[in-house]
Amino acid sequence: MVTVRPFKAYRPPRTLVEEIAALPYDVVNTEEAAAFAKGKPWSFFHVTRPEIDLPRGIDSHDDRVYAQGRSALDRFIREGILAQDKEPYFYIYAQKMGDHIQTGIVGCVSADEYNADLIKKHELTRKDKEDDRTRHVVTQNANAEPVFLTYRAQKEIDALVFDYTAKYQPEYDFVADDGIRHTLWVIRDGALNAKISGLFRQVPLLYVADGHHRSASAARAKAEKIKHDPTPSPDKEYNYFLAVIFPHDQLRIMDYNRLVKDLNGLSKDQFLAKIGEKFSVSPAATPKPRELHHIGMYVSGVWYELVAKPGTFDAHDPIHSLDVAILQNNLLAPILGITDPRTDKRIDFVGGIRGIKELEKRVNSGEMAVAFAMYPTTLDQLMAVADAGKIMPPKSTWFEPKLRSGMFVHLLD
Image (cartoon, rainbow, N blue to C red; front, side, top):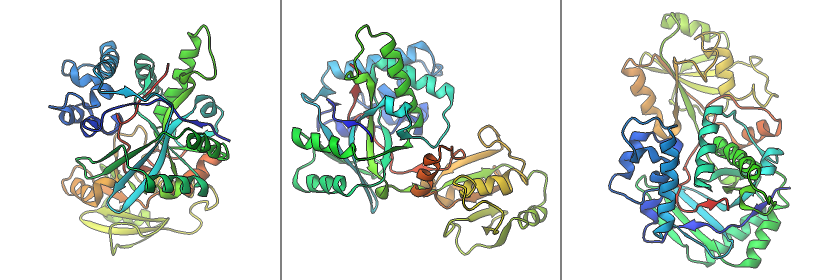
C-alpha cells in the first residue's frame, strides 16, 4: 500500500499565478523558455530553466546554472511571490483540454516506496539527465516540479474529489496561453486530509505516467540529504517528493509517431514489398490508425494502412504486443536498419499534440522519407508493462495536457 501525504506548499497569489505557471522544463528548449519568460520576471522558467538568465550559449550543466536556479527560487520566496501555507494540505488540480478533463490530488509520495517499486516505472532513465535533475533538486533544496503519477481508479477517492470540487470555490482558475484550463483547490480541512491519506493506503501501487527523471532524481536527492543529516528522521520532508496523482481512467495517452530520414537504400516498390511480408498493406482511408495493431504510413505523398499479420508478434507479451514494438521489430530494424531508436540519428519522434500535418510537412519537404502514425498506447498496456517489471520501448507514450510548474513547490526541509 502507498503513502501519500499532505504538505505545506509554497504557492503564488491568485493575481500572479497565470504569469508564474510554466510548462515542464523538459518540453521546451532554452530558446523557447526564454521566449515564454520574456517580459515576465515571475515566470517559473527562471527557476526551472535558469540558463535563460545567464550569458547566451552557457552549458546547461555549468555550476552557474544550478546556482542561478537556487537564487531565483530564493528570490521568489523572499519577495513573497511564493508563500508557504501554514499547515500541510492536499490540493486538487484539474486540467481541461478541449472536451477532456482530468482531476488529480497534489501531495507528496515516498522516495523509499519509489525505491521499493511500489511506485512503478515503465521507462529507462538516462544517467546524465538523472544527474542534472538531482543536482537541481539538491541545490534548490526543493521539488520545484511535480511528477505525474497514476493509479487504478478508486470509487471513494473519485467521489471525495467530485464532492469537494462541486462544493467549494477554487483557489486558482485560469486558461493558459495554449488554451488549457488549470484549476486548483486547497483542502484546508484536517480531517478530510487525513481521510485522503487513509484512502491512498488502500491503493496497492502508483505508476509513473510522466516524469521518470524527476522521480529518479527525487529518490537520489533523498539519499544525498540523509547522507549529510546528523539527525535523520523518516518524517523529514526530503523523504518525500512532489506529485500530482490522477486516476487512470481520466488520463489520455496520445500517439507518439515516428519519422525516418531514408528508405535504407530501397526503392519505394522494394520497401513496400518487404513490408508486405509482415504487414497487410493497403491505401489508408484516414491517416490516423483506427485500432491497435494498425499503423499509418506516409511515403511519397500517399498514406497507407499497415496491419500486423497474425503470428508476427506475441500477443500475450506486454512488450512485444505494443504497436511501437511491432513496428520496431518487424519494420524499423529489419527493413530500415534502425536497431537502436534511442541513439540512431536517422529516426525522429513527434508527439501526437503536433498532429498528422507535422508528419506530412516533414516528409513533403524532403527532410524525411517516411512517417509512421501510431495508435496510442493504452493505460492498461502501460500498467501491464510496469506490473511485469519491464521497460517500454523509447517514445511509447505522450501525455497531454502537461502539468504546469510553479503553482506549488515542495521544500525538502
